[in-house]
Length: 365
View 1 (cartoon, rainbow, N blue to C red):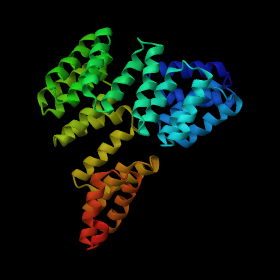
View 2 (cartoon, rainbow, N blue to C red):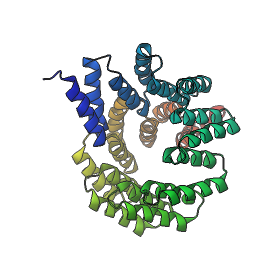
View 3 (cartoon, rainbow, N blue to C red):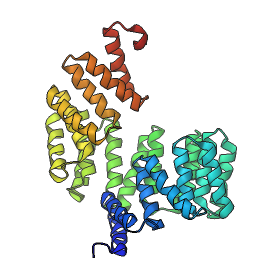
View 4 (cartoon, rainbow, N blue to C red):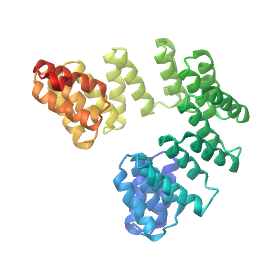
């Protein structure tokens, strides 16, 4: 029965558990199409769209739910999250407060409210909101980690260290909290306790790829090529077809100037998933590095059609134009990259160089 809504809903749930986000999205899309009043499907789709940074589309789904159920807490939390992402902090604060008026024990609302208050410079009020969340469920890991991150963002490192040590002591068999501790000490440039924490996470959950990926990145940052590669290949022994591991390894080879090995990893990724965008981007980057500019331009034209919001695609396309000596097209393309991502430093620097060559000192400056 191609219109059996319950089957599609179960299919969506199953794919979520399998980590197949795209398949889950398709299943929930069919549910919403067959049954527009299905609140759960609409909220799942809104969450997917929000994570994909398609905020306008996510907002439409959320408002559709709230039109039917004005006090739906899950929809209000998503609305508050969307307002926060859009830096509309006053509306976000009002939304999270509305949730708390409906249910004063809603921990996600306190966490969201804390983030909004911190963004507005109200750090004391933000800490109070987080502490209220902790008081509701003192042992709740998510809430305690939110408080840890609050201390970290505020550079209150002593309190952050005390709290993460307490969290680890209370959850000694949780690999994730050991990873958080490793990240903390890595940030403090304390490699020994960082490495020990990552290795403990791997010991607790040896089949989990994520701690190994983070450890490989840690070794790479420290310039330890032997341990970096060893850790990547250990991860591939566990999951030979893991695209994320192969892509990360390919990026590492690129950073080391080992183009041949990078291309081998990219080929293996595209053999499994021919449309995998990050691997195709990396392939394009290698084409530029190899001065195969025409092939690079052809690839980036296709990628930009698929992801018109990719600043990096425009930047690399600009590099290819620059390599061919076409500074006009390079400048136009790089300007688009900067328009999409004003903080894209490399794009700005190359654009400034082009303006200097044209003796347009005002724009260069």
